[in-house]
Image (cartoon, rainbow, N blue to C red; front, side, top):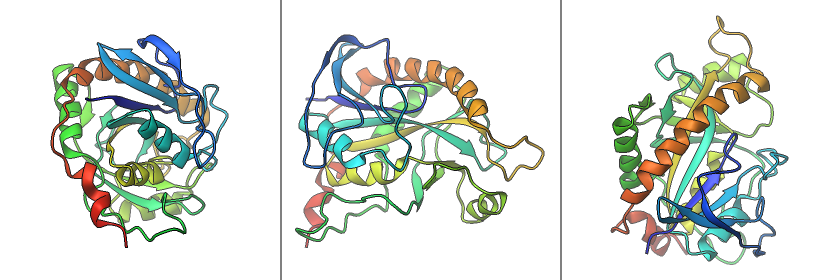
Length: 261
């Protein structure tokens, strides 16, 4: 049976379209999740929602308990994870207001636990294709159907934060092949793969990163203003896409079987 986990990012801590919401308080071996998970339904599809930064957006990207969030979703029976996330653009063609469904990531984080297996056994999880292709395809089809401005693929670089990049760093990320930049996809996507969950990010472009010198420097207020506009489109996307998610064969589910030594 399909159950969808939604890790609400900036602008999506609460989902008003969630029907029959019930809080499911639980503790994990890694501590408490960012906030109490809320179970309910969207378009008759069972979902579990966890606000990544807490309901009141009081947890910065480094302090998010990524392991507890993914563990909680797995324990509550989630099979697929959709992860809205605010991103900056590193390319002219990725425009503010666009949705992007990334297919690759570059990890530039430095302080985060990256695995559930940190002392008992060694885990080398395969991440050549880090995002679930069938899940991304469903999102792409819904975005096209709804005529939402979107980009079907891209490479996201995840930085530690909470500060924004320097201009020099922004240029380096472009040279490395990154298209968009955020602070939360890693290690979330890695932990989802270890847990056998299909995972797709819904990247919401809020601004051009500081490489684009014609733009004013990025500020939190700029990001939040565009986020409010993007959030409505993400809700529409979720309502349309969720009924199309099926429990089908996927490499994500069994990746852990060949990863443990």
